Length: 154
Image 1: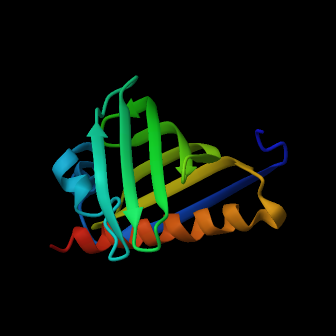
Image 2: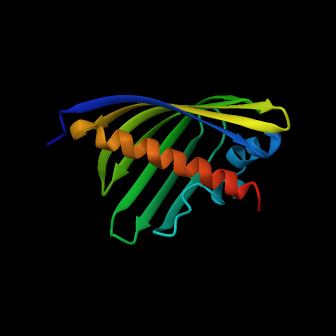
């Protein structure tokens, strides 16, 4: 039976990255560069990936965690402004259960010699008692931004 409760949440995270906007853009737009930071985790193994970065294109990343959990990120790109903005909608599944549907907007802009990266996510989290899934998503997105920043220093 489908989960009937839903919790809505919105968050915005901003990082000033020590890299040119073109490098930050490439970390999202290039499959090999994105693979360096997205879905990379010492606690999980990537078992499936597809990547079609264009309006109407889709991306998928399935990970198997040491705990036995399987996560499945499925996104569709809706708006891409070269070097500046990415907007996509994604479903997140955990062990086959649809945990959430989110609208994510990524903005990339020059900030002096750095790049300001802003991610805003608006999500519907199913069966989310007290917003714990939403809070976890915000923490997870922050960790991904940190992994992106580290990958730019490689």
